[in-house]
Length: 116
Image 1 (cartoon, helix red, strand yellow):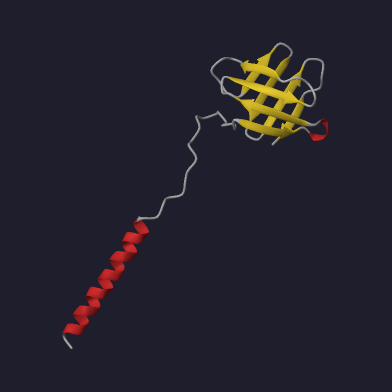
Image 2 (cartoon, rainbow, N blue to C red; image 1 turned 90 degrees about the vertical axis):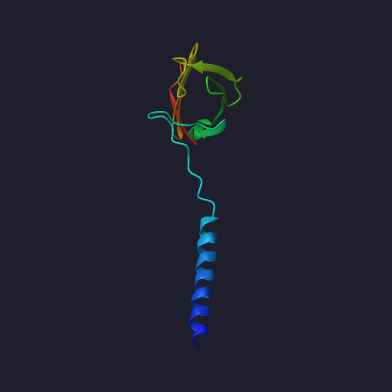
């Protein structure tokens, strides 16, 4: 009977080792890359709903965006000022992106707040 407790202790150690190894083999959950403070990360392609006015489609290239709204021809807007990734503009047009919102401005029209 003296061998039985030793065998049980060895089996317990083996099971605990296997459980410990299995626990170390799990994949940790993916974490989002932190963005620089004050900078929101926008997807490469997003559609924003502008209430009853329609949809705003934004293709984000980083230093510029291509914006389509309704039936109008797409407009290419450059980052304004250069180097940032939330404000874009060109003659008569401006776009401000923040989290899940887009503020779309066109000269002579009421600015639209759109959400994705």
